[in-house]
Structure formats: structure tokens, C-alpha cells
Amino acid sequence: MEMTSLRELHQSMIGAGVDIQQFRFKAGAAEFDCLFSAREAIPILSLTSRGANPKFFKFDVRRPGYWIKTFLGDKYRELHEILYVDGRSGRKLEPTAFFAELNESIPRVARPTAAPKPEDIVRLRHDIEERDRPFFDRSEQRGKGPSDKNKLKTLNVFGHEALEFSIQVNKSSIWSTKATGRSWK
Image (cartoon, rainbow, N blue to C red; front, side):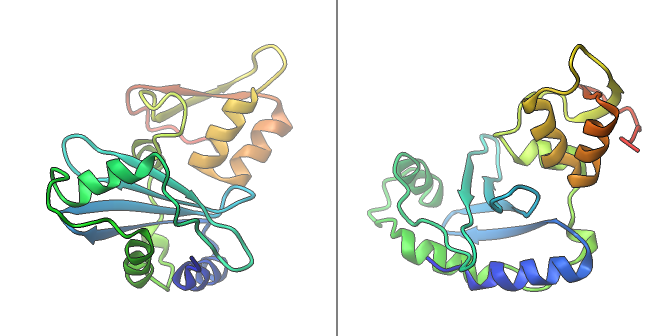
């Protein structure tokens, strides 16, 4: 499905000099914290349900048309249960309608204040390694420099500038379970 709002948001993000935006989306009985990240080669739209037992959904956004596959596969049942509380509502989840509703709720104008803090990115992106260590601690040279996983976490949490710095100085980002107040810069 073409996500026209993501195209507009992304163009606005480029103009505002930001590469990630956070926004909320309410559908059915669920509310989601959404992240749209243009930090990777393929932009990512992720939805993390709010509540005691958050569920994570990640979608690749294919350009140039800003398309998301509406086939949910294994994610269908889990999303249905979240949207209709216990999955017994009798309503069928129609992915095309769900994504159309999401498309309508996506902000079209980027705001620097809607760029999440690094620890919020780690909290909301369940696909990032070492989620139990959301806070930047320091950089350290280990062996041959940063691993591919470390580079990906640095990119997802801090962006391209931090990744390029990590590669340039050949040091890994070290993460902490406690707020350190430190920045990668």
C-alpha cells in the first residue's frame, strides 16, 4: 500500500534536517508509539503498542513510492489481538484498511521536537540489540573496532554522524543500563 503521508513527512524531515520522527496512532482498542526512521538504506516504520505488554511491529518502507506490504503473515494474529483487546470481537482485521487509517494519522510536517531521545528509540525498537542497555556510556576500542551489530545500533540510536565517527576512530559504542548523561560527541 502506498503511504503518501510518509512521503510528505520524509520530505519535511529532509527540509528540517532530521532523520527520525515519533508520533502516536490509535486504532481499535490499541494505541501505538510509532517511529519513522530514514537512518537505514530502507526507511523503517515501527509501531510499538502501549501498555503493560508492548508488542512491536516493523515495516520496511520501499521507495520511491513509499510502499508498505499489507500482508502481515505471522504478525496478523498478534495485531488483531491488540486491536480488538482479546481477539474475540468478531471483527476481522483488514490490513489494507488498517494501513489506510495509519496513513491518515501520520503527521505530514516534521518537527525537531518529535525526534525521540536515544533511550526512547531503544525502548520502542525491539529489534535493536541490548535493549536492556539503552544509555550511551563511552566509546572503546576492542580488537578490530565496532562489530556490525554495534554499528547498526549506533546508526539506529544516534544516526549517520555517530556511525561515521565510530568507524573513523575505530571504536565501539559501549552502552549502560543506567543513565550516564554522556553523549557520543
